[in-house]
Every structure is written in structure tokens, then in C-alpha cells.
Length: 94
Image (cartoon, rainbow, N blue to C red; front, side, top):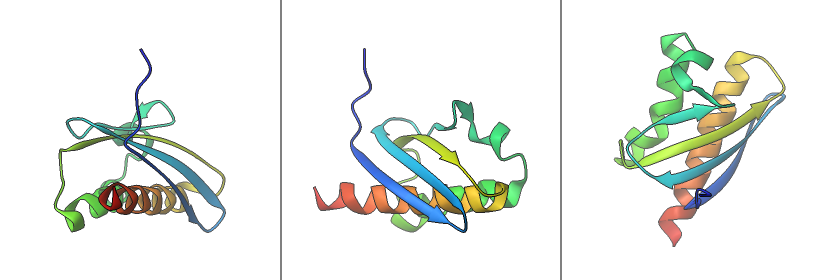
């Protein structure tokens, strides 16, 4: 069964590019098929990724499926954050 995305966003930071899909869920975040805690093991990077949900006050309401490449680990975290923010903004318009 295919997962139906609620919203899609593309994020960029430095040389990193992330494609993010939001789906209704419980707050799980997967980056390149791994839980984001494994892909971004440093706590500051995990905090960066959670920022859009805290700002929009929607923590735990969406699951995130992100594909990111290019750049370094910090740029990739920023690109995922940007993609999540854009996807949240797009889902809010609907």
C-alpha cells in the first residue's frame, strides 16, 4: 500500500537539497530510510529538524519521509528543516 503524502516540500541549504513528504502520523521522521536520530546523531542537528514542528505547534501530528543529498551533515539538516517548513506551510494552505 502506497503512502499518500499530505504535503511535499523541497528544502535547500548550502549545497544540500532535501525532498520532504509529510503524512498524517505520530511524529516519526525518516531520512534516507533511517530514523533521523541515526542519520543525524548529534543533538543540535536533531533539534534543528524539529524546529518547524515546534514553531507551528504541530509536534507529533505528522510523519516525515525525507530524501537528502549533497553538502555536509549540517547543511543536510538545514535542508531537511527548510523542506519540512515549506511542506507545513503548503499543508496549512489546504
